[in-house]
Length: 190
Length: 190
DNA sequence: CAGATATACGGAGGGTGCCTCCGTTTTTCA
DNA sequence: TGAAAAACGGAGGCACCCTCCGTATATCTG
Image (cartoon, rainbow over all chains, first blue to last red; front, side, top):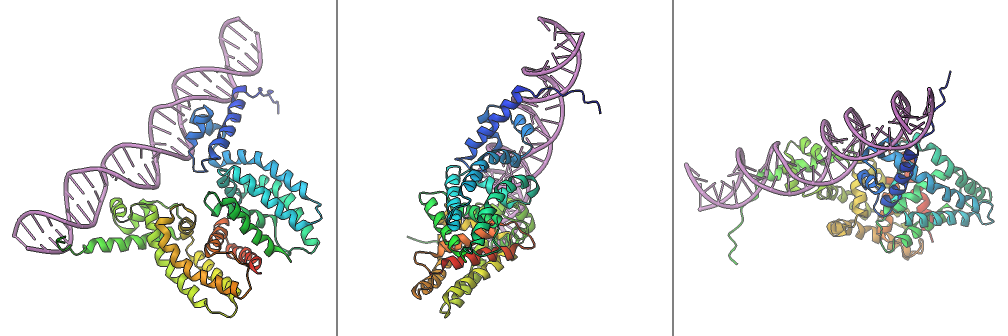
């Protein structure tokens, strides 16, 4: 029971952790999720061992990076709640999401892992955060009788990331993804 | 100009090529596209060098395997041409496609490569084969005024594989994919 | 401030996978 | 039957993932 009063966490460790997340963003952004862990470590100016102490595997690193990006998406979704055109709110959120993905292409892989992998435990908390708000958007639209019942936030997220993921990056990437997404949203309508 | 009359291709080579494709199907099926080339070679009972002489890289092997599967899909599509409910024909083709993907989950990766990668040259011929027939389905539906204009076979393929790819395999995989696909098809309607 | 100790660092190295290269073996043909 | 062409197999180079542990550094205590 006697806690020997733990030490203050070391400053260098914290700084390195920060640097690693920053480096991961930069390397995973343009590159893609197949970028090597070594590249991230080098960019952060630390050894590979340090990377793996902070993040025991690739996914843990993605998790940390993604967790930060998520706040923007949650904010966007919350800002759209209570809109008087709920279907357009959903469309708006999806579009905003695509825009964000576009600037962080490398995140894409991380995102699709969030949704796809069986590691739902690890990502459960992240998913919960984003799902809660989007679900409210869906409920609003459904209660207004504007979209069909039985579509979940998870459905929406999965489909969106799937569409982002399907197309290779290119000049018309955004345009194309939005087009497919709009068709999907139209299909959602009651 | 004097062709020295080329030799007959060696029998063992041809047999090994066949074995490799068969092995690839078996290994890539249950496993997934991340299965190792070594595993394929071992299963085929040949050395890794032999594999790479026949198929210079992973993609070439996928190409060969996929090429065979494709015939079924083309046949399915052609069978649906001229249906008097063109939208349902499209939906039917998509459903049939999903059913096939389900039994060859490992192919999935290969399929998504076909659609996604920049290697459109390498896959151009394959894509052309499948695209031609599906495009006719789309044109029929569009001319009947039942679906919106400007949707291509490639759009459809991309979306379908994206949706298949988005969801991790599991008991409700098929059900879920079909649900999303149906929403999409509904959105397609004029 | 100096030692003691917990904490963190770095990178060598074990394991695996992709693919290449080339000495050896097999098949075809004359 | 014996070249010569064609194909085989797997060692090995390279890159990546991640682990392990000797070394270095920050924090705490007297």
